Every structure is written in C-alpha cells, then in structure tokens.
Length: 255
Image (cartoon, rainbow, N blue to C red):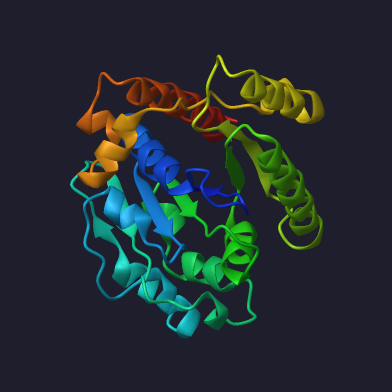
C-alpha cells in the first residue's frame, strides 16, 4: 500500500516543488515506485522533471472526471518516478466544494496498489486543493525557510492539520518540518530552527536542505539534482533526506 505524503506550506517560496521532485528522485533511487501528483497550477514539478505538461491533467478530476488521474500519469526519464502533471491554466477557485475528490480518485484508480509512495505537491494557499491533499494524505512534510514569518506559517498549518485529523482524516500524521535554503552559520536561521525544535520537538525536524545554486541549475535543465550534479551539497542533502524518509517507509511497511 502506498504512503501518501503531502508537501505543504501555506507560504510560497519555501521550495515545495523542489522538495517534491528531488525527494521523489531520491526515493526512486532507493527502489520505491514514486508518483508525484502536482496540485499546484504553477506546474513546477513537470518543469523540474523536463516534462512538457499536456492534457489530461490531474486538475481534470475537479471537473468531474475521476479517470483523469489514471489518464494523466506519465513516466519521467528518471527510473521509478512518474508524474501526474498540473494544468498551468487551472483556476483554483473552480475546484468546487468537495474536499474528497482526490481521495475518491485515488481509490478509484487503485493508485495505492500501483505505487509505494505518492507525493502530493500543494499550492501555497489554504484552498480546496490543499484541503483535498490533506484529506487524502497519510503524512505531511512541511518545508520552511528558517525565518520568523515561516515559523508563523508553520503554526497556522499545524492548527489546520489538527482540525483535519480530528474531523475527517484520523490517519493524518506530521512526518516533520524540513528546513530549506538553510544556513548553519546564520544566527537567525539557527535561532528559528531551535525555536521550532523547542515548540514541536527535535525529532520533528528533518535533515536540512542547504542553499545551493545547483538546485536551480538542475531545475532549469529539467533534472533532479542527484542526477544533474550528484556531488553537490544539495544532492548530498537530498540523499540524506531520502534515506531518512525511506527508512520510515520501510519501518511502516514491516510494523
């Protein structure tokens, strides 16, 4: 059974799509069959994998076509990694009121039997697409840039997750907070990460992704960084993160 992991932060610019693409590639390297579902109409996951998005799209399920999920899935050039691309012209306000459309489409398409991991890349806003992701997810990874405003956004998202867990999705769990564009030398970054650790617990902090221009270079070439620049510090960081998440997935499978 697949584990569905939502990559969420209501604040933009935290690297959600970068995390989705590179974590997916890292998990695929560990032998997991990985599907990215890109719910953000910016369609950055397709760009990061060198895929030109074309219909059908994952967003077609919100127009009453649950089969669009199956029909939209394309294999990337990276072994073990598939994508259900976003529609770059989709209007988020047209998603409707049903917060279970994604859950229903996943069930109808037997996605959980065909993949080991489903990563849900979400838009940077509290809209119906984010709610659909939280209703369908098992785990949530929260990328955040370690500064004060991001910390405030984390607390708001955790409150939303708690509400969803209590009301509609009891299996929803916080996999952890992921520092992105992080610096071990900047005092403010260190202070914010310490505050997150103090408030939520040190075991909630995932291995950080440091600032590295090679990530942007890799995205511009449509490749995960572990393939584009395997000796870069970003590739090293995503390898460590993928190993961490992969071990948790294996523990869950054997529990």
